[in-house]
Every structure is written in structure tokens, then in C-alpha cells.
Image 1 (tube, rainbow, N blue to C red):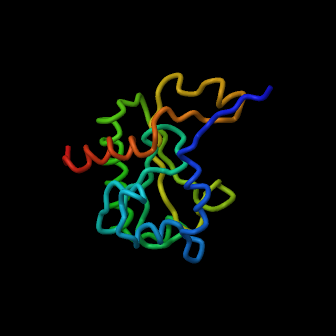
Image 2: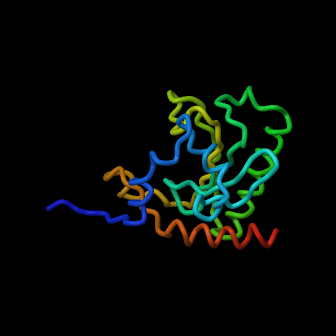
Length: 165
């Protein structure tokens, strides 16, 4: 008998993943829409925004995305790069307040060969980590178990973002 891991919250996203693309860029469509809650956007800055990852590695996995569609860090101007880094710092603060992680993985997958899921639009990942957060499911089953619903994560993080803590 095979084991089953149910994740019904992902069905809507999987079913509609291709419906939000303009020239293949999900980030450009999400940024242009006025539905932050539906699109998991937590904060909008002048040049970049912070959002929950719809395919998180852990609860509280955020992304910082420049508003301008560029694929390479070299194409960002100084103001964009400064704001992205300021938002990475703020995102870590917000995640600390909600989840109390013991560490973070922060990085960019620039280009398809580097593993970028959306290679045409550079973005930063902020992944909270805890000692022992990798278990047999990841090691043996190549499956990640996310213990919190995406909408619950969004509401928890949105609260601290709005409070400006």
C-alpha cells in the first residue's frame, strides 16, 4: 500500500497556475493587480514588494520581488537594489516576530540553470529555518510537509506588517 499526503489547499493554485501569465511572468501580473490578499502580497514598496511563496519550503517562506521585470541583478539600478535589501531585512524581522526561526536561508536563483522557477524576473527567497526542520519526509520521500495553511501564514504575517512593528 502506498502512502498518501493530502494537500487540498494547493489544488486551486495548481489548477490555475498558467492562467496568471503575461509573457510568462507571474510576478508582473500579480504586481499589477489590486488583490494583495489573493496574491499573497504582504507589503508594497516603491520599487519592490514582499509576498508569500505559494510553493513554500517552510511556513513563512517569503519572496522579495523587484517591480521592474529584469532577469539579472546587474540590470537593477542602485535604488532598486537598496530597496530589495531593505525589504529582505524587514521580511526577516516580520518572520522572526511570527515564527521565531533559529536561522534563515536567503538567496536568489538567477537563471534557469540555477533553478529559478521564474527565470525572467529576479527575486529573493527568505526561508526561515529551525534545527531539525528536515525530517524523513524530505530525506526519504522527497516531500516537504508544511504545517500551516498558506492563508493562516498570510494573516499572521500581514498582522505584524500592518502594525509596523
